[in-house]
Length: 611
Image 1 (cartoon, rainbow, N blue to C red):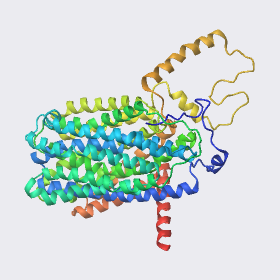
Image 2 (cartoon, rainbow, N blue to C red; image 1 turned 90 degrees about the horizontal axis):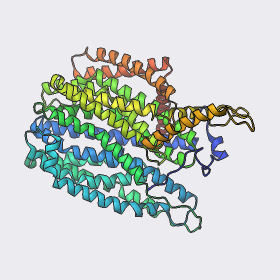
Image 3 (cartoon, rainbow, N blue to C red; image 1 turned 30 degrees about the vertical axis):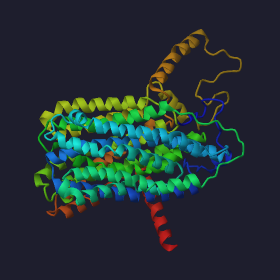
Image 4 (cartoon, rainbow, N blue to C red; image 1 turned 120 degrees about the vertical axis):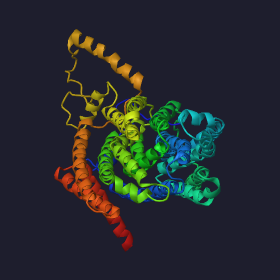
């Protein structure tokens, strides 16, 4: 399905960075031209705005579910069925299919720019979309057929498994609709068209909310499952016209330039989907363990997780915009530009999510009371959900790091199995910690297990696979001044005609080489974008320190006022002010990047009003 572009220095056919492009890079390490920066600012603004709108509608959806059906056995049954769209969104829209398809479309667009005969983009669509659509239909039908057994496996202690099975059959249609929506999103983002993909969750949540209000009286919680099916169709409908225009607006070229057609890289697709499935299995573990607790436990976990993950979702919007930029840079052979972009994304996303996590921990009771405490959702439900949300927030940094780092492994279009190994280690930690704490800590123990598990995965992805650390060190030294006789690979200098260090040196080198080949065979190729781990860890440590101080100050400010609204406002303002001042005092790069991004967006808004 995609071509495997080689990283610089790994073959003789690597495309060198053009001198004009190298000259366009800023001296301070900036990896983008002024035109690209303006484009990214505009795309980020559009994506973030519509993502906020989609997240707010998601809150309205959860509020409607809580108000109409409360936090009991009925909502537990629906939330077990909700596992299907959660899995489908991760595999087909967010982490899975997008990571595999965006590099493929980026390479096809590069071949189109080279003047390849025909239209490589249309050829890619013709060769992949029919097969994938058949797979989506088959999986949807399979879920419908095994819904009853699937519910029993996911939540064996559920009070009403028949209702959960009915909801699962209704939500199974989202496998097809989400698959098509994810395909359209990947193609449009590779074409740098971000507006239609950013609207999909607005349309999706609007469909669910409308269905609950229109059908809730007669269908009960099944109306929410109908809404999932309706919302999935709307996700496809809002993107198809734009994708059709992109495919029709470029006539087939007839220049006769011979460019090799991209092979179908099934190993890459398998590696990406396996990682995404492994990551989403954390949700299965949570609901499996929570099904043994009293009614309402699954609902508490759901409401707490949905609110706590809003900062993580918003922080990853930048990566949604920059991922096609990274893949195009790698397709052009410009690894340094891709590395600078990924490291900047790590700093900015970590800063944003830690501000949100500090706010969630400091103001959890106020947030839950304002959002959900009405109708069938009681004050006791608010207290339990707030406690769980605070524990969930401890893993938000890990969630964000995984979301950013996983793109650095798959952006080059090569299969890598190490991310799946790292995710499996995190899932194992989640299961065993959750199983050991669920009886004593209840839902808070399950949330703590989730936070620890995803943090373990983030640490493993940041460190990288064994045997690759020396390669990253070599990447750090690429731009140092070259010494006479010293190659760029970092090897020791040798004299012309020298045989090296003799028999002992040759013996040691021969003894070390099989280890490198063995780790490469086990984990696949290294990450496509090498990053400077020590610098990233130093930046993260300062951000965590700033977030801890801001959380304590925000909790103190939020606990004073008697009004929930005033307490929330006081906590949010305090967290933001303390985070910003302390971050600037410690010269945290993420805070500087965030302020620069805000100034860029502000200038664009001001210019937009004056034009």
